[in-house]
Length: 213
Image 1 (cartoon, one colour):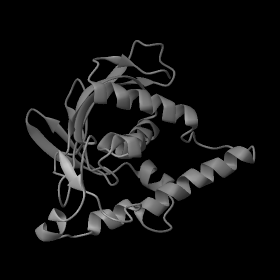
Image 2 (spheres, helix red, strand yellow):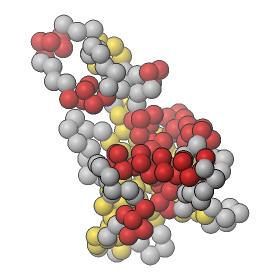
Image 3 (cartoon, helix red, strand yellow):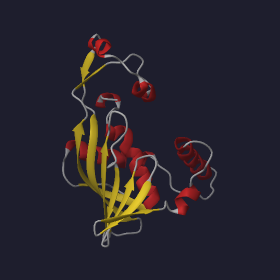
Image 4 (cartoon, rainbow, N blue to C red):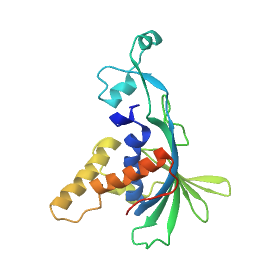
């Protein structure tokens, strides 16, 4: 959870999912990114059998127990902010939509500002949340709530909780693909590589970085 060498950090664990959802819901492709990340904590105790992040998150230890544990230095980020440019799938580079994402991990729950901010000519569309989404539109400092688009609701299978529904949607498209049937684009190893380029650009703070489509 807190070690980059073990796959920890907010960017490794969250950003590939969020970018996949962002591209799927908007029908646009990520083409460039700039951002920065902040380390979550300096040190943390090493918990036994910490292979399931859900168990680690729910584990409570006392100050006395923590004092008797092994402590290690943490290098995984606990928050980040980034500005992305999205292009239409058929665009030749002339049309971009700027989208800002802010994510901060809290002790209990993420803060309210977590989410996406789409900047347009007539206002800002705000999508609050990470795995669930609430929408609002801000124009001239006035914010109005918006319903979730029906096509997004109808496209998501309703067989269990939100996590199971997302996985089922992926499986449906994958099976249709290998059976040579019509399907929606789903995440591939190439997308994982593209998102890793974005992760490193944010983590290293290297400035504007182009992302291959």
